Length: 114
Length: 110
Image (tube, rainbow over all chains, first blue to last red; front, side, top):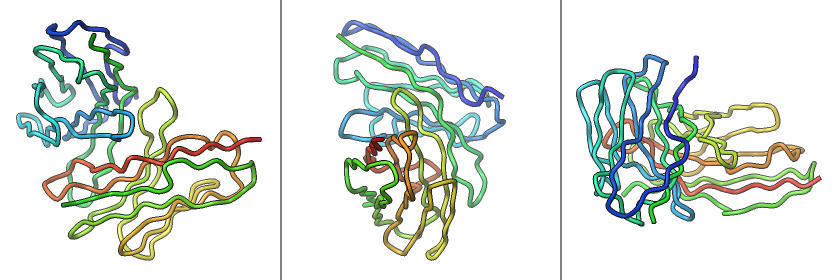
C-alpha cells in the first residue's frame, strides 16, 4: 500500500500561471482533504470531500478549486497563482464513519509562486 | 469558535530529560483529540486518538493523556530521534476535517 501519494513534490510558478496538484489514496477511504501549511500558521483546511461526488469549502478556499475525480483521487487547482499561495500543500484521507476521524497524510507538494 | 492551542511553541531537551507538551482545546462536544508527529519535509504521521477524559495511550517513549480541557503528550527519556514537530487536532464541528494547533517543535540533543 502506497497510502496517500501527491504529485508533484516541488513546483515553481509565476504569478498568474495555473496548475493542478494531484492526490491519490489506495486505502479505500471515503473522505479526502486538502490543507496548506505555512510557518507560524499551522495546517489550514482548504477544501474537503466527505464522499465521492461531494466537495465543501474549508477555512481558506479563496483562489482554489477542487475536483473529486473518483473515490481514489482528489485534485486541487490554482487557476491564477499568487505569491500568497506559496506554501506546502498536503492531501489527506480518512474513512467516513461515526467515531473515526483519523486522517492519513501524503508527503506534500512544495509550491513557490514568484 | 473552536480553538486548539499548543504550548510551548518550541522545546529543547537533553537526551533522557523527560517533559510534556500541552494541547488545550475549546470545542462543544469532543469527538476525539488527535496527536501527529511531523518530521521536516514530510507529511504529518498519525500517533494517537483520545476520545474521553481520563483516557491514556502509549507508544514507545510517548504517552498521551486527556482531560476535559486539554491533552498532554508526555515524553519519557527522549532520544534525538524523537526530535520533530508534534501537532494536535480536533474535528471541526461542521464535519470530519481536523482543526490543527500550530504545533510544538521538539529538539532533543545528545
